[in-house]
Length: 432
Image (cartoon, rainbow, N blue to C red; front, side, top):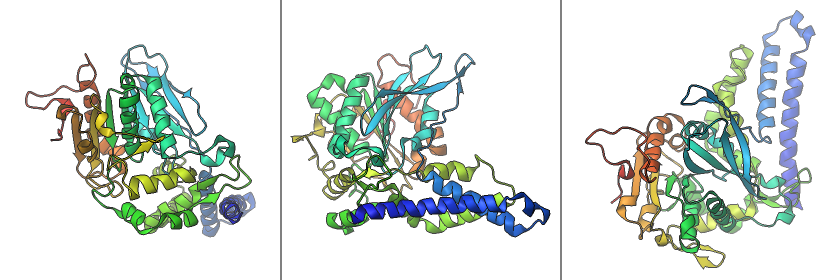
């Protein structure tokens, strides 16, 4: 019961700060104060506006807000989001492009379940839509899932991916970003034994911890220092009475957010101080750089306790994927059974979460896959976020990924024209 009280206490603190921000903004904006202009009232209104917005975003799921794009015929293409498969813990959603008649690459983008919503990949989605028929895993906030729905751990996550891949069919190309990379690899291996014809054509793993011990980081060091008992005692709480998942054991989003911010507290403090100054001076606006980033960054979701704990224990501490010892439903999943799915890994040289070496380790596990179907890419100067969003993704990584997809699609022409001395896109930075 104390865990439920702790969960409700965190929500009470968040709610109180949101109320204080809204109250300060309303009071400082009172018309009578305009008769005697005072910089202190402008600053108070700015503080209230930033504070209210900040704490309200913590419990809101951001909208996808996918803008229309110009099609090949010069007409605007509107994009709608449709549920392809609805499940208790996550949906498979489809970004349907209105008026599109020409077939595009069918791509499944596997979003992380690591504290943020799938909308964290909004810019990735926007960049892929003109060239791909895109599907995305949209995971649910555990606080909104009734206890009656049961558990959800790494095995259940893997089986969800198996079902999604089966539904989309063998012409699918899968891109897994960060946390789901090892489980997506396991799901593909699971299909290789259970239903080989349902395997995707290609698998691109971006910045995922396939072998966390290959290149230790602060994240892996933390997992080594803390015992499972300590993690369960410090991180796990019961959902409070306000939400449909009341009583469910979770790793709360607000607690995750506190951890995220504490890692770079000085940077975040300076960012908010500067934003308050900009608001007070009338230089900020609804969709400025600060708001666009923090509206997404602050929107956090609870993870089920069993998913968080099993991820730490089985992926990081025991290294079951790295040792090819992962088990689903009592059955060993042998990654070496993947023999036809082309696999490419993408890493960033400055990635401090999944450092270079952790993701490319997947290629060594693919003992049954010929080298001609293995490829890797290391993006110089890119951090963790940069390898799936931002300039590095747009200018370098995205074209390489599309080339890799095309090279493993029968009858498909390459995405880009290559010079006479450039390698085949199936083997850019070929792994040997």
